[in-house]
Length: 146
Length: 189
Image 1: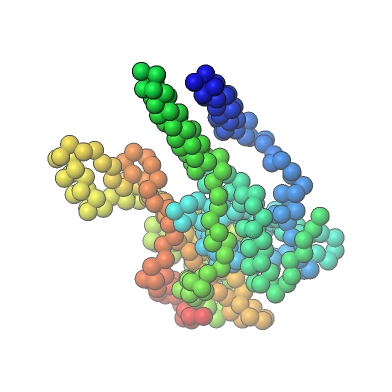
Image 2: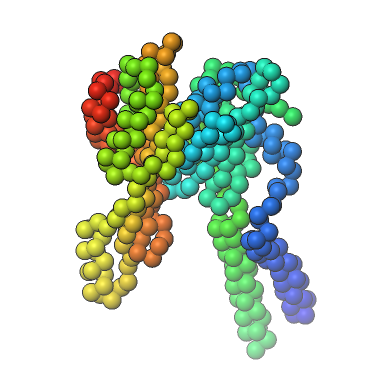
């Protein structure tokens, strides 16, 4: 009897911190402004590919058409900045920004940044799928970069 | 007596365990770890059909006149321009309209009659992106592709629908109006 009530107390001691951690991870809503994910370098490499092309305009136009193929409506595009943003609505809300900039003299660096509902997408697979679709439209291979 | 107490303690413990489990799962499902659906970035067989539906080819090398005709037609059908980047062939426009549907109103009235409160769709934001792109070699023709989507809010300000508008009739009608505006024939791809 005594033993049983003890385990009950332990139970509470064990689960309470879990609650607090779970709560704490959501609570500080202001702190999310400059929040960087655990490994920025890793995320950057997940989000970036290099393509053997120097035609920036064509790259931006192909990004736009690939996004349309994937069901996005374009929100804005800027040729000078080399950025394209779009939103996909399919019960969920998915926002994607893609930037294009030169890498050396022979390559273009394409970075994609996705936001699903209220969270940043950190899973490599969606980005991989996007770059596969983009590469297919360009007839070019997407190279991973460090 | 003691046995009763033991039993009730066991029951409490079970309840507590269930509660713990359900609270944790609610957190996982609702809050901090929302997972993106697998198919969100995947080209589906329907992607190709949609592309054909949303795209027409125009035999002209004048991209600017296609874009300005596009802006004019979008305004004709009540859209206001949000954003444009002519160097990339992009026009983005939207319109806010009522989303009240007779069917929902009737249901809400019947529900109110029985004392139940229900909210109906009230407002919608409809968006369109109008994109031109060169087609084939030596810029002799251009493609025009449009995509529509909308968000619907109910009377309590909650989002009730987020969707793309893929009904073929929208696209056919749009290109009918558009091809008259540019004095060019719209070719399917």
